[in-house]
Amino acid sequence: MGETRSRKRPWLAALLSAIAPAFGHLYLRRWLRALGWLGVTMLSSVFVPDATLDALVSGQSFAWLDAAPLLAVSLLSVLDAYRLAVVNNYLLRARSVGTEMAVCPDCGRPVEDDLDFCQWCGTTLDEVGADEPARHDVQ
Image 1: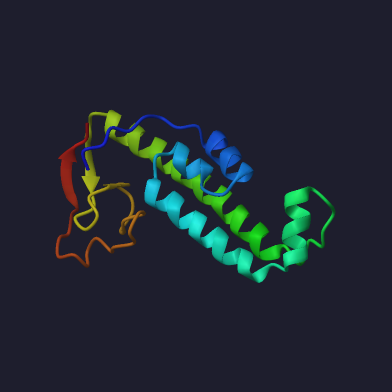
Image 2 (image 1 turned 30 degrees about the vertical axis):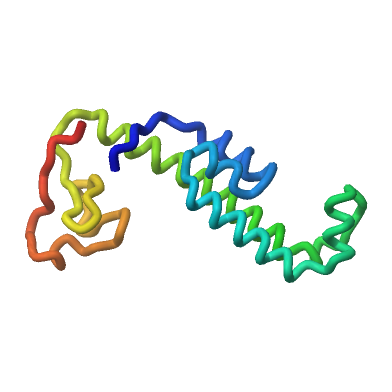
């Protein structure tokens, strides 16, 4: 991809997603993922009773169990935004090292030298036909 990445704050991505699902993903500039989380949130609201939705919107008390689908989606959105920000920062750090690193031949991401598999896509490095993963100068 031709995008330029910048360091992101995982806590801010999580906080924004806690305010509203997908806000953290918008902060991370993951547009399609944000759209997906909005869709999942809207889909999960189908399983919440109308009275609970009205209580949520108006700030009144509601039964937590009735709102479980929306709360679960919100929690997963927070965790996903936090994880994406951490991975983004890790990749930036790995690319800025400027040293030769092992790279997965399947997904092209940096691979830890002491692993027999890619921690990103799970590909067994012996399985792809090479005893050693490709080495590239990381920038």
